[in-house]
Picture 1: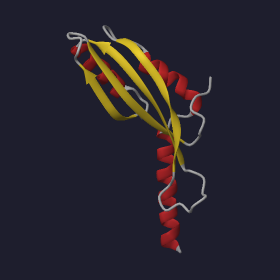
Picture 2: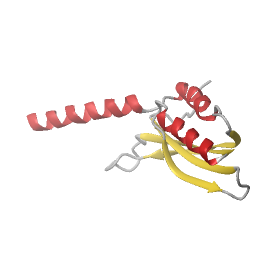
Picture 3: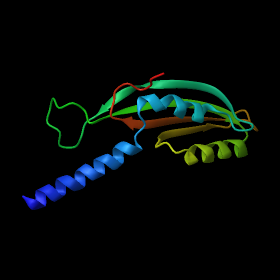
Picture 4: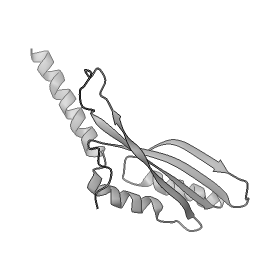
Length: 131
């Protein structure tokens, strides 16, 4: 029993750490502002949100509510290579926990390049944005 209680305490602490790293819907507005704010030479040419996806916890029984929701968006920016690198470095330095699942670079209009990023984050809530 003591071993199971210790394991439960560990899992509880781990869940609290994870929960602190998630982006609540009321903060998503600021996150999006940080992401679309241009860096010198970068122009946002497209932005679309993706539908939320339920993420079930491992070993969850069928019919159990999802543990998390995966929220995503796709952003397309245009600029010179060095400007795109600076933009990506700025995104990586943001305090928000974001995961990139796809990046596509189009060099058809060199020296201007077009970068399309698909970005996801997790939330405990299905609502993605509160304004």
